[in-house]
Image (cartoon, rainbow, N blue to C red; front, side):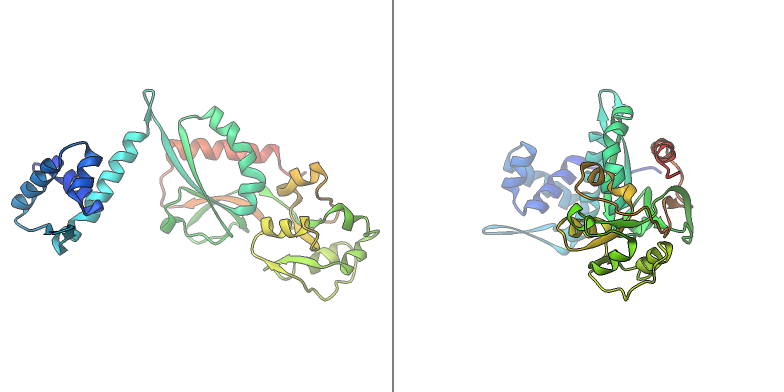
Length: 293
């Protein structure tokens, strides 16, 4: 593509003035004089043959033509700034965008990210969390770590970990539970998957009670409720190993129910970058070493 001459100084002056709606503040940002900003904007207006600002007694008002031009320039300058910031000590830093179920992010991934960054210092991870509802394309994600059965339309999914659920509670409540049937006497904290507690009681060989209790959309929030003594949570012990190791939580019975696995997923149409391949290999090896026997 043959590009016409781009008046970069004029475009930059206009973009800064449009953000601030002030030649003075734009001049301060760009370390030039107000006159220089005004001159560059005037040159751009002459080149385009349109008026970009209406000069008011106190500031500027951007015109419709200016509003049409601004989003493209703002995005372009932001992208240029972003790529320049990724160069460090002679290296180009790769950016990897990852979305993860909050339980996995807090309970499993975060404690391991320091080691990843130590081994791969030029890969910057941008991590967001969700409640297992994610749109990889719309959110611009390279990977999404989600919980389920691995069957998602147009999605490449690799199994990471099975994380069976079990009853978890504070020690004060655990001391009141001599047998699995005693759990039924406590408030049962649960997720939107209504059959989980019934399956746990079946696995324990106990007739399930009528399930009532607070419904949570996140195991992290559910465990916080359990830590505050609000009841017994049904959550994956693997994701809350720190609370179990510290004694803040206890797992009173070795009874488990499996509701799915954690998966590393990406769009099938998404080409795998070197940073994605590095992260995938590292994550799968970490998962292999921590897989439940």
